[in-house]
Length: 219
Image 1 (cartoon, one colour):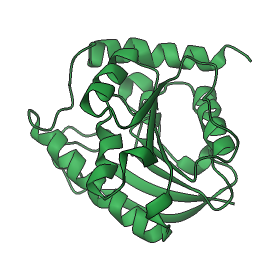
Image 2: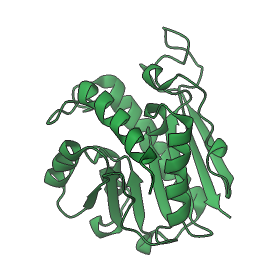
Image 3: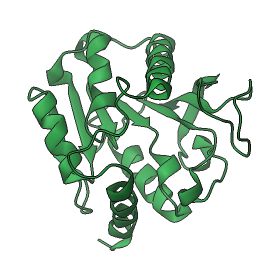
Image 4: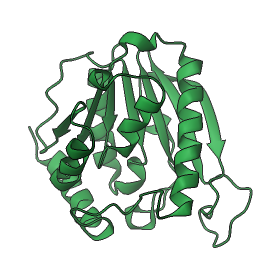
């Protein structure tokens, strides 16, 4: 296996060591009103995406890619999923220690750059929340997309939630899921204006979307 995924992961590790040092909880909605607004909008669209997919939730296996400290993974518990249905994967070992401490019943995996211990077509629902906006290189994003494509079976789904543009440290480009996820068809899309966030290229809040949820189905 090439070392390209490792370079991607190192960039994310380095950037997030600054944004959320080990043991920190930078995006805790208790302390930051903007993050409370963000989580509310995400939860609303995750519920809508699951309804649009019309999947059997009782047995659905879910992988949350780029789960960090597990907050986006635990959101599925609020929608009635059991911990045994959930897995999270991240490249930051410190964040995963926090995730495991918060909910030992959920399986959290450390990605060290050599792939995920999941068989082809094993995960019918993958969740990707504010991940691509932090990854700088287009080829690295494609490598991550290829991994997701391998584990999602035909008829499976990808729930993609992110800002409309990458963060400045990741290039600031427009994020379009279809650019990376060949073999997936769009099912549903919902733009969001998250209160407290400014749209890309602006400094003040407006009615211009700041985030977007996209549901894709594997062909």
